[in-house]
Length: 112
Image (cartoon, rainbow, N blue to C red):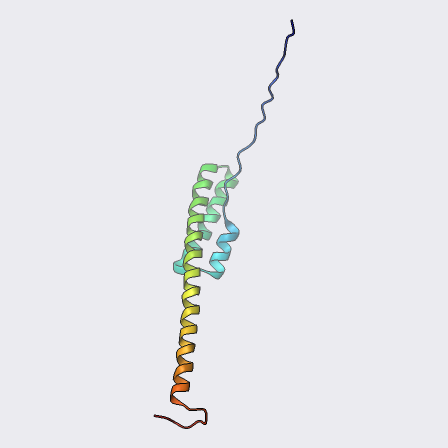
């Protein structure tokens, strides 16, 4: 008979280290910091990085996850504030233009 020998090789893949989102946190802190969420995200990102350095991957994962949610909140709120600001500026400029043209004729005489 034919004998078959099967050999299995075990490959150990180390788990991916948790993300600390430090760059995103810095951007949120510098450019979009509504209600100090960017600052809080930056603090949690630094804590996550510190936990990674000492080897506490579960703590790093927890702090990184919190930093991620704070960054999401800061990004969404910052974007909403920018959109509202643009809409407000456009609306006010249209109203100012209408008021100017309504009260002043093109020959600079007052209509009253």
